[in-house]
Length: 160
Picture 1 (cartoon, rainbow, N blue to C red):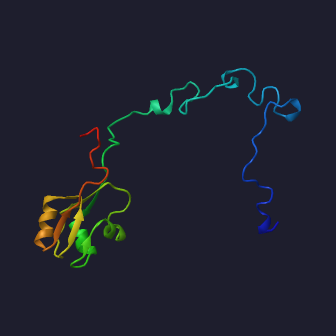
Picture 2 (tube, rainbow, N blue to C red):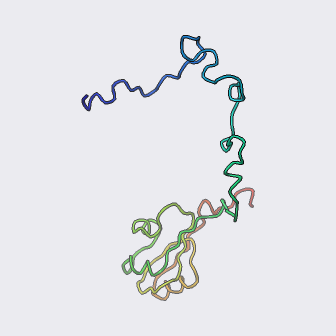
Picture 3 (cartoon, rainbow, N blue to C red):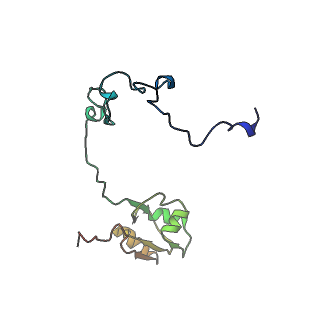
């Protein structure tokens, strides 16, 4: 066998098995469903969590707490990280933070927090600032620009 023969005989779209076409086909009479029982009937389907009459795992495991699936995902960056990564006079925005791996992944809102010192003059664009972060940015001679609401923040017709 050669590398160019590896995929010979393998078809991308396999033909479905034709059941119920006589006893000679090997899938005749009961068509592979066996004799009697719930699974042999037409229209039968099981719940994905069904475990043969036993108490399903999703019901055995205790449920605790609360998860708000509508909550906005907030990415946080401290001013100490800005001091460490950016140069004096730089523009700090979503793209600059992503390029320097400070705000990775998917998030709805970017918030700057005030932990650590800041001596560099930076123009920081974010959706939210903590009070101390805003004070430290302005004390260093920089500017804290609050971005408008993201499309996820914008009120819908039902909320107005």
